[in-house]
Length: 111
Image 1 (cartoon, rainbow, N blue to C red):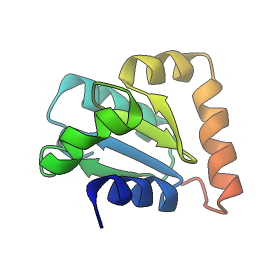
Image 2: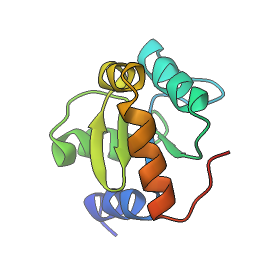
Image 3: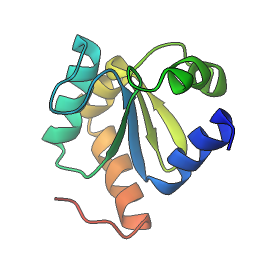
């Protein structure tokens, strides 16, 4: 499986996935930390990929997504954006609605 197919597969099987630096327990940058804190505040289940441990994904994903930075939040196969966009959407309530809709559609439960 080539790297683009691998990314497409990860995005397709995970209703909510974030590509970040580090892990949810130990984010390796402030932007990833902020993004994870938003997801944790919304109490949703999500998958993550540590791009620092996956250099092939780290180099290919920005080209695939046409988004140059990390973290990258993907919901129902669509790129939402990074931590700034997540924060804006969190503050106006839009992110919660999108995440809940994705989880409902994929028959997953909110924690």
